[in-house]
Image 1 (tube, helix red, strand yellow):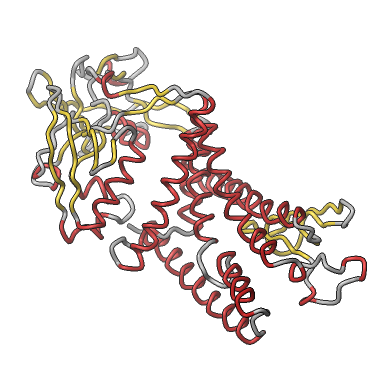
Image 2 (spheres, one colour):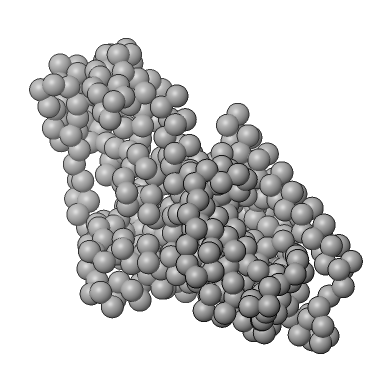
Length: 451
């Protein structure tokens, strides 16, 4: 129940923030262009809070259904315009002004992403360098000769400096022809070239959560080697010792300390078998997982500290000046935007799985998890979804901003507005396309729950 409420509240917060940014773009540019704004609403349906203000007596409200929002401009097509408002209706303003208003919503989403990334980067970031963790035998990674500890120097022509652009490069190379050329630096410092060749398996590997398992390696993280045994942990009296590398817990494979945390937290009070390696020999112990309260929830607690085992070379602290952080934020937003557009196009051609389309259930789960992991993760998710929202709204679908821009361009070319019949037909096509998209999204959300 707590997780459900966390996810729900995080989802409402996320959607409300991004919708407010999007609609504010329409609102403020509309006012700059001399249009009269009748209502600015966060959410749909009946208003649950309203304030009327400004010389135009605009209604500012929060409505009951927190799944979107809208700005309502004065429009002569919806009714008569008072003489004092003549020329201020949306359809009475010049076409460039209307297009500017329609573009403003998506562009404010991009501006927000830049701002969010700038906030995250402004104080500098501590990041893992792109490197290879555990490699699965007989996998694509093993066939390509990837070895634990290899640093990824480049993917194709893209330098691998951080994991996010490296992942984008891997996916971009893979969906082209199923081949991912890479330059690696071994732990001995030598450079070598290799190619991850997934062939016709490329579409499956674009499904959510499949990429690393499908390729056969995980990103490098500190291995689960015990460096400390706190007095309050059950591991201290279990027979485990400093220097042991934990390999499984209750049959669940442990490749790094993140795997260990994930395996231990839901097993409070349970008796489990822990397998480990000591001095090159495999052994096991029976352990009862302890428990502790974290954020009002009882979690399993083993009581082991970790070591990087020389992992300092895999970490980097990137320090930016204010201008550098802004440039990096713009670059990250541009990269993510191009990647999103590319992936959408590849879905149409079948090169990328349509399972990547997410609906409100999955977004709520992601939002809830990001809140639990801290504000930086939540802001990062806000940036990613804001970019997706901006791209989605620019699609030439009649009920979206992109479709409305097409209407304005047609009007400019033919010297008059499209016929009402043509506009209604376009709206019907747009609604059908949106319903189809929502159906895919809900199906994917439900399928993920039962996987």
